[in-house]
Length: 321
Ligand code: NDP
Image (cartoon, rainbow, N blue to C red; front, side, top):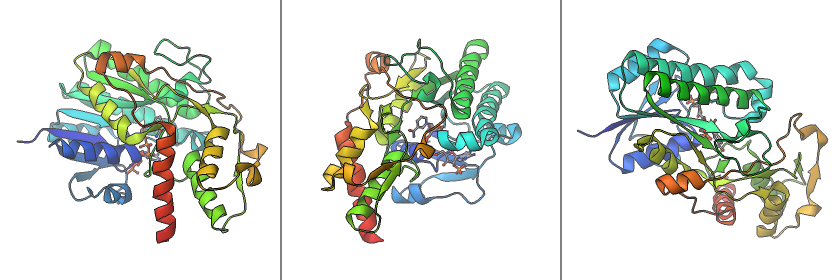
């Protein structure tokens, strides 16, 4: 019999890559979606929509969550389900909070009630560190600047509590930004690439962006789901930071993207103060040393390769449309 894995939030960017990776390792994969009619676009793009069983589960409902885990009896669970946009969290704080905190608590409580002995992974976020002066470690100062960050921090604390008090085998991977061709179009790098391609093809005139001085650590999603598995399966039950350890100014990323398309960014980019966030995180840098030392994981794809992957994908999409 194949080992079973449940991916909560399987239709998202990371969920899709994770399901693909698990299927490749011979797992029987069950995915959950909060929608009755899930969006299978990303899973279809990876050619795996038919290869996993997708179940509708309202993670904000304890009984439903408990029944699914109890019925399927997986050896491991990954919770990637969340309202994952920081920007949207300012407009939808209640939805964001519920989708992250209520779901985390229900998953943990379900595991406690059915005495689940498998491994459970939660997707945390670098947003909990706010602006970092030095690359963040688990000992860094917490500085919550959005409803999303607040929810992710509560999720992190709940998982830690259930691990320590109830001996649930749960861990959090604190993820820094990671992109891929499957990333939602509203996120900045995709937005820059799509608009730059349109400018090159004369179907758009300019790119309007907010604060381009911000510094971020951008990684490749397909690699980050490998880190999630290592953390979840490790004998040491510990939380880890998942990042590349290299950070870039958004302005430099924009320049790189325009340059690769044969354009000068200064001719096409407009800054709009309306797009600045009230509580902007100026610099977000992480330290991947712990996961590298303990589990041997490090990011392989650097930001230039990542941009190449994304531009090639978006150019193909543009030519098809
Ligand atoms: P996505 O937004 O691509 O996927 C998350 C999934 O969560 C969606 O596909 C959706 O599936 C489900 N979901 C549940 N409730 C909601 C809601 N209220 N609004 C929107 N979606 C909801 O996220 P990623 O795959 O990029 O990220 C995976 C996890 O990692 C998330 O928890 C995210 O917060 C976290 N993370 C991601 C980072 C990144 O750079 N990508 C950085 C740091 C953390 P359905 O509709 O089928 O239920």
